[in-house]
Image (cartoon, rainbow, N blue to C red; front, top):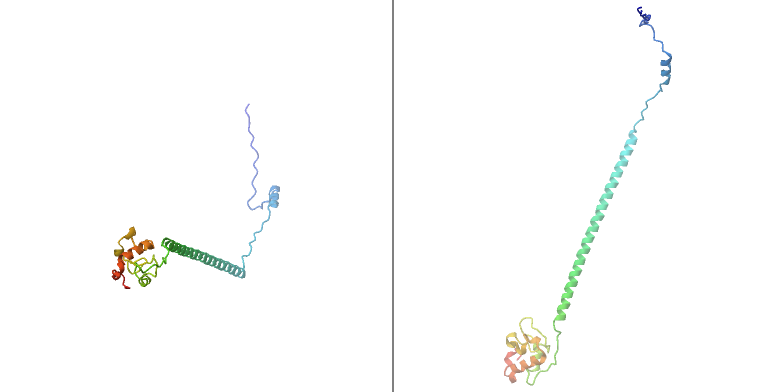
Length: 193
């Protein structure tokens, strides 16, 4: 036996001019849509823009003033530091110079009036007074003359083992003066004669 197939009945479509009736599902979906509204906020007004621009200008002006003042302060501090360093260096140089002078003064023999012995077998006192005032350490700044009797280095010639007369004790200087004086015959050795 052969099977026979039966086709389902055909339903004619509704004409296109017929209005579409919403189904129950479509009606529920339409109710589910949430209504949204788009709102835009109004931008700042021109007065608000002007106010903001002025505030920005004031801020930038103040910021630049602060930067300028800070730079001035930093420059002033740097100049003060440099000046303090220069003053400290000058003070150190002055102290070093003073120390050098004090060391030189301490190294130089102290002026000595000596005994003032003169006359007799020595040249007369007026020669001694004119030449050195009796100072056995006197030095002539314009020649090599030195000592109580102001011997030139060429005349002194290392007498008594001393390079210059001012280095020798008074007794050695007097001995050389007595030798040159020779009872008055050597008066030409002194300009005061």
